Length: 202
Image (cartoon, rainbow, N blue to C red; front, side, top):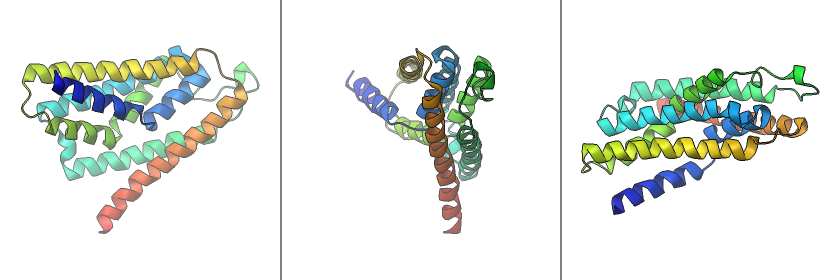
């Protein structure tokens, strides 16, 4: 029981730190409503579930430098692309002037969340480090931990989406949130690629 509480606490505290996933959910919820944002939430949760399953089963291929570097480059490029789209979004003056992201279907939002989660090596490395502390846990307990963490990720992300997207935000607010979120994603993506370049250079 003590081990479970420790794992649950560490995992939840990590969720509270705003990151790429938080900004994607915030932007989607405020521009398209919380129901549309649940697609992004589920995609992020599924990506976390994949990392949890691979880390806890010992199949963590991301630990290989080539795989890690490839994911880091792809993830950085993806974040720069999405961030640029957010920054370039225009303020809406009517329902027919929504941006491409705002017209995205639930399924497309799911794909966006899944890609964001899978291309973020920090997610994978977090679960790898967590799995390293649970080497003595039984397979059944690892399954229980995995199901719990997947459920908490999904529940927390949906909570954020509902809290921010229950009422459609004013167009001006969405406009500035998009700019801020886009700038963060671009900087984060550039940082991912820059870190890898520095690692290669050294």
